[in-house]
Amino acid sequence: MTHFPDDFLWGVAFAANQVEGGFEAGGKGWSTADVVPFRSPEARNYTALEALMRASDEEIATARTVRDGTGYPKRYGVDFYGRYREDVELFAELGIKALRLSIAWTRIFPNGDEAEPNQAGLDFYSDLFTLLREKGIEPIVTLSHYEMPLALVADGRGGWSERGVIDLYTRYVEAVVRELHPLVTYWLTFNEINTTLLEPYTGGGVVTREGEDTEAKSWQALHHQYVASARAVRIIKDIDPSAQVGCMLARMLHYPATSAPDDVLEALEANDLNLMHTDVQVRGAYPTFVPRLLATKGIEVVVEDGDAAELAAGTVDFLSFSYYMSLVSAADPSQYGITGGNIFSSIRNPHLEVTDWGVHHDPVGLRIALRDMWDRYQVPLFVVENGLGAKDEVAPDGSIDDPYRIHYLKTHVQQIGEAIADGVPVLGYTAWGGLDILAASTSQMSKRYGLIYVDQDDHGNGTLARTRKSSFGWYQRVIATNGASLAD
Image (tube, rainbow, N blue to C red; front, top):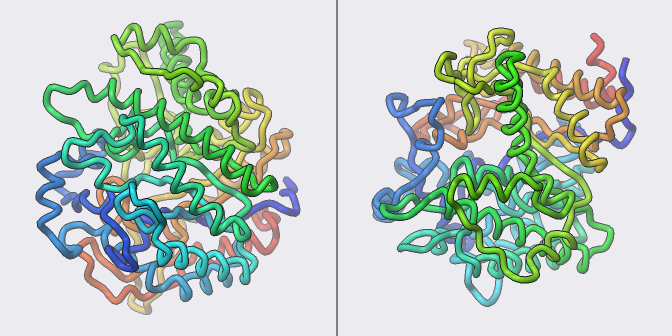
């Protein structure tokens, strides 16, 4: 049986824009997430998630005419903002050692460009983090997770493609860290930073507009995020030298469809592009293939004097990542069927089962990813997202039995144990969605990730009552035994 470290951080994870609600409460401003509508079943194409997650100028204008949450579920979430004390009590009962969560930028700077932070927003997170600490739960805090001030994106603004957003973000980081650093050890600068190339609106606040090169703007936005991340590392370390600062990647592990060299090369290039982001943030420089790639695309990224030095000086202490599924690459993908996924889709792997949403179930891929990244970077790793979205049924007696979720989580955590036995230093594991949350892509509730059921439907109806699923008891035992029960 694999022995997990005594200080292993067992936990759960979610994002502010998927749970908090409290739209405009406490002086909160509008964020990019607040104008992404609920996507009906007819509009859902899980092999083209970019179209689900973006918002056009026209959609933003329409959203602004709606003053409540009607049609925009991320405005009300699952009311974690109003119920966080109740939820933290449940997390304490679960026994978690860490809660990975995010701060809503617009609770601190409602429009992004204010001279002073909103104290009510800082007070909310101070109260929340203090309560977590009292319960023995370590906050793992993501500073930017799929939302930014809408004022920096709408009305012709360019989001992260504008150089000035770097200064606005770092002002926000400094305000948050100065206020909250006594309560936080682990900070993450950006969630799944590679999303800026995959889904420019969600990751980088880049609106697709006629006559503009969205891909070029996305690369520019990404560069600005790299510089901002490096500056954030230095700001956090200046305020609290004991802090640990990490990056966060959506790990997209690609296998070649066959042993044909062209397929192997295609997978290699896909993996290199995925790991480019952590190359920059961990190693401090772009990998050498990037100039050729950008030249092939006809894209020129504006890199200012001093940017390279900033990237080199602002490397992270650890690498965190999400892992849901592996993917498959082929030189000619048209001959293969496509399956869905989380933000990305893939050629169907015939050797793996898929979930109801088309996600490959590949726990061994997590072990492969851990070993690969440890060999590449030699920094501690942290699995901060991994979970199963599924339809849960409430039995007549009110219970929710979810053996499929237990199977998914167990098989993945077992492979983390195998990677630890292989010598990989893993700081912890935070399962995605301690609570049922709104799906990032479609804003639906019926795709449930939680160990705790939330009584709310896709249209916001329900009591919001929290109910422990059978997976809650299973994970509670895993944590209490520090992973020993995984052998059962």
